[in-house]
Image (cartoon, rainbow, N blue to C red; front, side):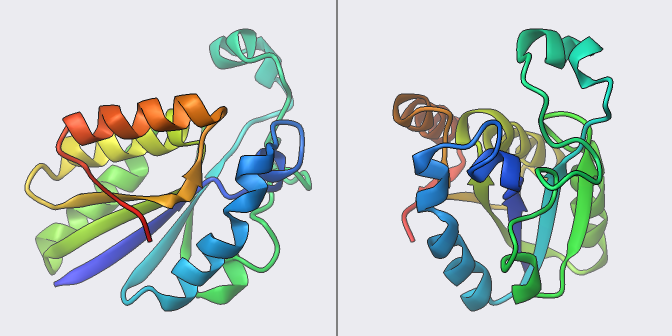
Length: 174
């Protein structure tokens, strides 16, 4: 059985770019260590928008241009991706059905022991992908490492962790 680590949107715009926060900057080294020491397969997701993002429903509700394909802000933080050979899944919105389908296929092929999520933002993309994976794979343990996640605010980070816990997603610290 395989173990997976999903590194959600550790991109420059979410760390110290247009939507960056001190909390996001604070988890970069811990996330790097998690990737380095993880005993299993690593997958990165990458929030991916086009230049027309501000015309989308999401862009109208979050009117900050970010993670535009091929921009510096769209890139995964230098040093993280280089730690492990890993697949990258570009996603046009918060959750990735492509990620869910890929892991469901892996579960059919080999069986998945567990899936751990880390990254940004706890209260938007991490929670969306954790719940999506729980729906695709209800019998596979889904874990979120709170020490390697950051939300838009510390309060919304805590709220997202509590919501995931209520949905039978295991919250770990480290």
